[in-house]
Image 1 (cartoon, rainbow, N blue to C red):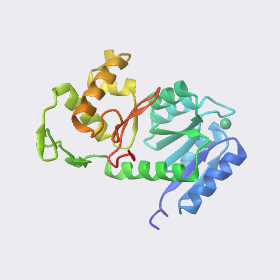
Image 2: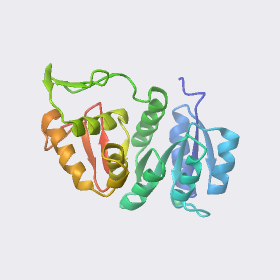
Image 3: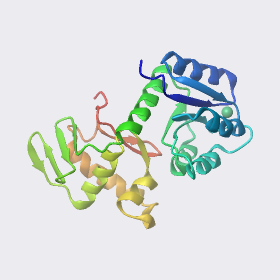
Image 4: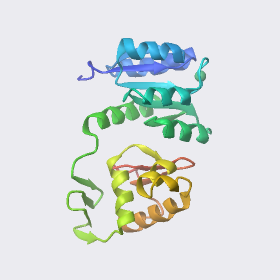
Length: 233
Ligand code: CA
């Protein structure tokens, strides 16, 4: 199965959700460790050495976002956050603190497994292939060129930088703040309208139907996600 070396730590205080997540991952062949509190999470991190943590933000003993911030000061473990569907602010804060992705409760087994697989794959490939192909678009990062259907597409330097950051983080959600900092710089974290405009430009140039994008996806209230494998139109 190839998963046997990988340990996943599930941190969730609600027993029925924890059982559900643990069973879903164990059936996939992962080794699974469990914790019901932030304190137990820190213990298990040392004991089980997981590659990935599935972390509920509503823990009894500590604020989950605070915990992520601390983890990030010494650990590169992947963090998948579980959060209530409507809690956009919480998700954004968790991602800005260093979480790698999130799942909205309630979620299905398929969604959980797909997200975990994608995160573990990113750990090993790190999105550093020079050429990335999606749909009929080819991005050559070595030569800083973009083609669509074999025809060169002109991108402005800012459009190219934005596309580059999204492509380098393929499959992963990036918050408005993360994208603005990466592309425009530290002082631009609150200018979400820049992103709306420039993502709009990229969709016009690279998506078949800019109004219904398949690769440059909006995560409402949170940010954007670039998907190599396009969403169904
Ligand atoms: Ca909880």
